[in-house]
Image (cartoon, rainbow over all chains, first blue to last red; front, side, top):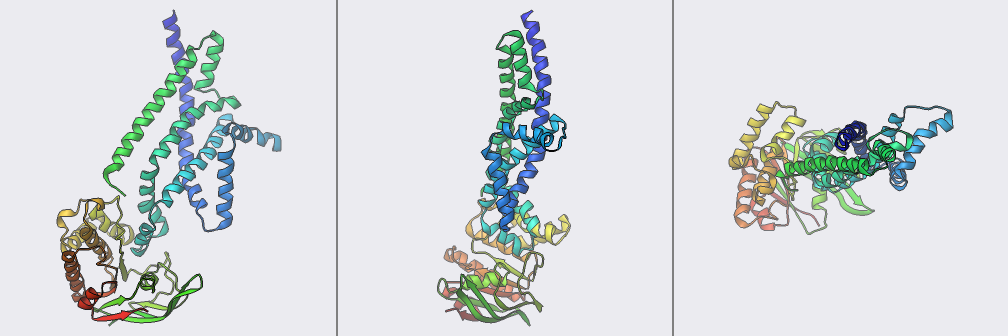
Amino acid sequence: MEWEYLVKLTKILLEGLQVSLKIFILTLIFSIPLGIIVSVLCMSKNKIISAFTKIYILIMRGTPLLLQIICIYFAPYYLFRISYNRFIAIIIAFSLNYAAYFGEIFRSGIESIPKGQWEAAFTLGFSKIKTFFIIIMPQAIKRVLPAISNEVITLVRDTSLAQVIGVTELFSIAQKQANFKFSIIPLLIAGLIYLIVSMILTLIFNYTEKKLDYYRG
Amino acid sequence: MKVLEVKEINKSFNKKKILENISLQVNEGEIVSIIGESGVGKSTFLRCINGLEKIDSGEVIINNNLVKNRISKHINLDIGLVFQEYNLFPQYSVLENVTLTLIKVMKIKKEEANRIAKDLLTNMNLAERVNAYPFELSGGEKQRVAIARTLATNPKIICFDEPTSALDPKLVEQIFKIIKELSNKGKAILIVTHDIKFADKISDRIIKFV
């Protein structure tokens, strides 16, 4: 009986994991390119653009993600009486928040590349965009990969915040089951699932770091 | 034939004049060295004519084209620069360091680019090192890759920033031969150096910045 319950519970939790993974993957798809744009805007010579970007980063990093999710979902309703899909709100909130973190990570990576690399590319006729994507970014990514992997693993755990506006994901299902059964087991299994996902990601990042180890500099 | 003509260029940093009315001419096949103490603006001059610094006034004419303030949208590939630090791209192999410009900038097909690059690298005695990465190379090898990379765009004039500063005497002899050979092939050469002995030995003309 107990064993049957555990199997059923795990199945339910894995359904929740699907939602969590959807949030996770969509957030990465949007926040990484957005993060690259944020890093470029932050380094802009135009003071207004760079100041505006820095304020955005400050707000995103300086306020709880929980509050940001609530604001992004409820603000349109309070301001314009418009309500929209909760899942979309979660993706917007997560992407905006993580783009700020990724932006700062990319900026530090890009700024750590010696100026001589830009100059060599320039004298060889590379445009700024080509220099950025062909010469600078590959080097910067290698340097910031450990920091990126930290953020990505944090994102796995942060997906549980989606429940604050009623998106049913892994952790909210575990909580419901725990309350329903007066048992801590569902929460422990959920914890184990988060741990396994994090382990898989750690392995992927370790492999990627090793792959990029073919050169120094 | 004139390949480089610099007319009265001026450059200041924070109101401090670094270059004042500098004029210079380099002809095809000629080797010109600029010597002078640190801080007199030798490297700044090289950076200005290569478009890495904007000049305040004056004219830079490369292969009969006026290039006032070269910016990234308008690049003149008739001039090339071999940096003191070489500035090779670490994530690319020796061969890729040379083919990258051919493929991405000059839009030459990969097979053709590989052929051109291998020829250039063979001329630099680097045929065995095409698959190595910059961190695996010695200082002299890095410099020769940097020269091959610069030659990929087939510039009319090649500038060298302190080409002997990190080399032992044997390698200085090697770079001497390479520069002489380039000049014999008609390339105009402009060298900035502290090494007066080297400048004396290699140059057709020496200009002293004070």
